[in-house]
Length: 213
Ligand code: AMP
Image (cartoon, rainbow, N blue to C red; front, side, top):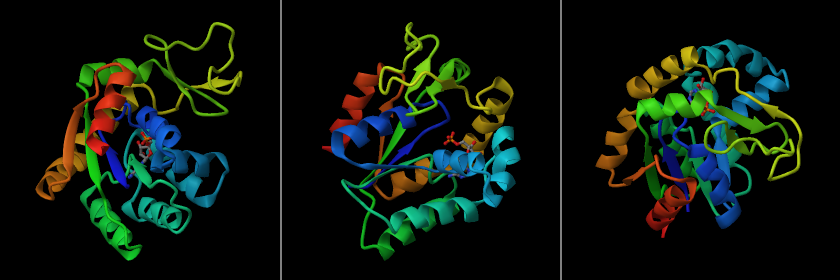
């Protein structure tokens, strides 16, 4: 099964994707993670996109479509979770074409709805384990008191360079201008289901599972 998790920054797409990886042996394809990896390994592409990402703007369609194309050539396991991709209409068209090329289809597009105020609160409080990427939140899920990641025992935590109020404004604007048209796009294709992303992580996970069957 192949699904898209669609929603603004901070909606919880990454957190839910990680659960699906564990529970259903699916493969998470996060273009944000791929771009951050390219940055930290200092590739030419990574250097090129760093300033764009820090400003909260979108990287070119060509770059992210290329990243996804490479991954679709690889292993498929229980299917793909597209997390943070597609973010524009040309990306959505390209994904349809790429999947068709591999004889695959998109089964569900799950929109995670969260209001803007909650997004700002979530994002400015967010940190992750530097080793495994487990997500923490100063307000709702603080880093363990013993300083060790509850998932992998790692002791280093980091905050994303773009998780500040200024970049977030640009990221939200990019979401409303360039990504939210995908809601109508997939609705018209009869693929869209919306879930309330504001609840507890377990409750949201249950809603997503119900959609996937
Ligand atoms: P994310 O981790 O999904 O919040 O992505 C972090 C940043 O990476 C975004 O603010 C964009 O600058 C860039 N990015 C990630 N995915 C895409 C995409 N599909 N299209 C364009 N830019 C992207």
